[in-house]
Amino acid sequence: MSDFSKLGQYLDSLQDLYGMPMGDLCIMQDHEVIYRHSYGYADLARKVPVGKDHLYRLYSATKPITMTAVLQLIERGKLGFDDLLKDYLPEYDKMTVADDFAMESYGNVVGQASVHPARNAIRIIDLMTMTAGFSYDTADPNIAKLVKESGGTAATREIIAALAKTPLLYEPGTRWCYSLSHDVLAAVVEVVSGMRFSDYLRTQIFEPLGAGDFYFHPEDDPETAARICDIYQGVNDRPPFVEAEKSYRDQYCFTPHYDSGGAGLIASVDAYSLFADALACKGTGRSGQQILSPDLVAGFSRAYTLSGAIRDDFDRLNRTGYEYGLGVRVLVDDSRSKSPVGEFGWDGAAGAYVLIDTKHRLSAFYAEHVLGFSDNYDVIHPQIRDLIYEGLIVQ
Image 1 (cartoon, one colour):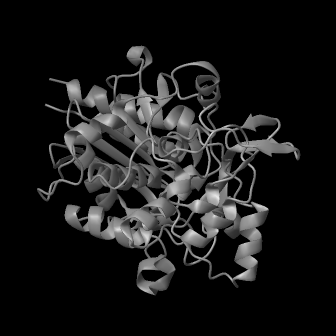
Image 2 (cartoon, helix red, strand yellow):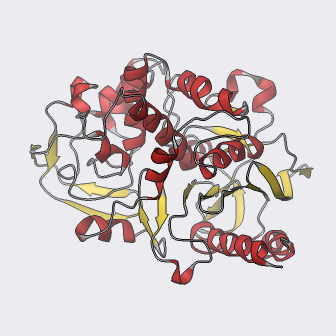
Image 3 (cartoon, helix red, strand yellow):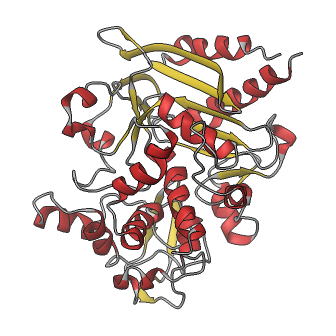
């Protein structure tokens, strides 16, 4: 019999420890919710309690969903791991690469001005594993120029075409850098499926799972926009938290017509939990619909950053015991974790956290809304993970 009392106490303590505005955790096993706990306020100033109808910006917790879409197309024979990106996006045929670059910190990379023609072509697997050569420069000048020239109307396919004009940081397949790779994959999904990325996700993943509360652009509907929790940010990576600046909050939303495969989705905890549960149950959701085969779900538990410079690059993120897989962290060493080897998931810039464990058919999704706070990843998420497993094994 499970006992999550310690987990609940820890979540509640985050308000006193950090002044955390809000949080909401849902744990599912075998399609059933086995624990749900929320705390705090969706609107701290007006003291509006967190409720199940509230929405959260997922940021990079979008990436496992994008990977699921790509794996669906691979399963259907419409795309291949080793296919060349240029075969789907011709503008990526002749790329240039910086002669040298320095990886300064998480997501911040400086490339030198001199470049050479790329020797390696970008493959789909390079995009999936963040080894394609891109950076995470949301102020990319080629994107900014297009957004301005289009009057803010440029769509996903157009913006990703503009990105092709920017030199890569390194030869594809040789290094690892957290980047806009999954945004590029959203454009690939559009080309292969013939659908806008948001429509593909809605019809092929969300609707089959009965998970309707996912949005790319909720500002289109005032009632939906009003459900989004207020978002805060740390000051120099520490509390007290203040309301997030709009430019910081919206840095991944280039235009209202751009569907970011890396950071664009907004969702309720209930909706995301249904998605995570489907992967934990080897591709089949609570609705009974299968969105991915067990064999391809198993691919999420395979690590790709296992040696050399690629491993060293990923290890700068300090995800203890983990390596990087198909858009997710993968546990390869359980000596300092209470979850099993093969557990996978990812997180988001505002503190979202997803854990998927196919061994125990277990998933957990935690939503929060604080940007610029590294304790989320270094302290809070690992503690939540371990307390989940402590609660599970109590007899």
